[in-house]
Image (cartoon, rainbow, N blue to C red; front, side):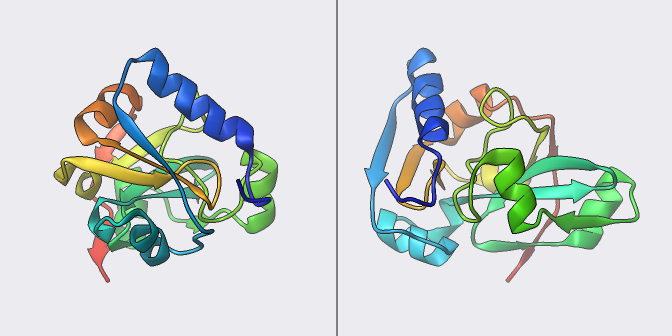
Length: 163
């Protein structure tokens, strides 16, 4: 596992999946700092990647998940939440709030990360989801159906745009 990680997050994810008796694949690979490199390391299309973004939406941090092949439409995000401002968490905020580095955030709110979880509909259009699991060197691939069942999604939203 990379030094740019928090092994407790990976362990929490694996324990959570195991508690629910879910099938998944855990891959260990070279550090991947981009969605494109992560997809290549996993041998999967970028579209199944679950890109998790910690965002400050209005006055609250929320976890936003979308297909790694798409980009965030911040206007749509502000509209969905009815706020004037939204921004990405800074590297320092990310480290303080999660113990993680950019690119290692998994697509789970509670009980893994303490944030409400909002998932873009693009994430749910595939049969599986692949994501970095608390490090730049550990990925999980699992069925979208299982992800949707256990992820405690606050709301499914439409906030993505093509790259």
